[in-house]
Image (cartoon, rainbow over all chains, first blue to last red; front, top):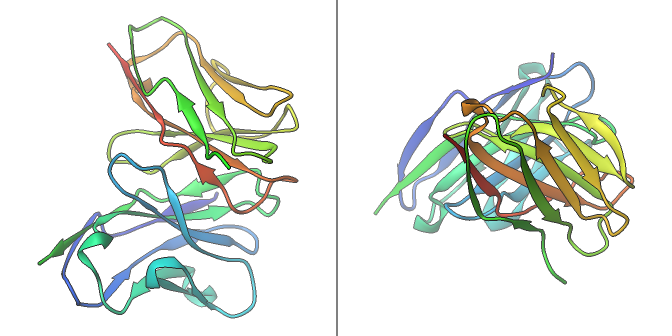
Amino acid sequence: AQSVTQPDIHITVSEGASLELRCNYSYGATPYLFWYVQSPGQGLQLLLKYFSGDTLVQGIKGFEAEFKRSQSSFNLRKPSVHWSDAAEYFCAVGAINFNKFYFGSGTKLNVKP
Amino acid sequence: ETGVTQSPTHLIKTRGQQVTLRCSSQSGHNTVSWYQQALGQGPQFIFQYYREEENGRGNFPPRFSGLQFPNYSSELNVNALELDDSALYLCASSSGPPGDTQYFGPGTRLTVL
């Protein structure tokens, strides 16, 4: 069965510190992986996606993610967090023909001044 | 270019009633997906419509149904509302054949009393 696990419900980091949000997936075929961000009152916004090729993908707002097939992981990273990054982050996996998507339960990021 | 819009913004219904939620796709998009996001959870895929046909469905009962119109706008109908149907309902559009990049609307907050 397809599933996405985000082990960390809440994370707090200081502004300027590095960030890593964890995501593990279970999918029977080659996964299509995504990270989204959701700010209060805002719709979900795509940060980055991975389909194939280079396992390190760059996204918007300075985020990157690394696909590790052996660990079934797709962790999101940012070298230096800004206060405006405080939001909820969702990892998702898409079916091969993009007719189904499975989201994790999300990680809420707080940023300390 | 207008983004994805949803109406209404908020809705209150009582158990057993029926509700219709509406979504207008981003210009040029012919695929619409609907999601249910309960409080503190990630979005759960309900179904997807591509060119007015249901193209994929998640684990939701038949009382969740949908329509897509020739202009690619869409409706989500929920019959026999239950308390657990209280959630944020998100609509996302993409260009088809169903594409990887979904653009989400701000959602409709449904409260069932």
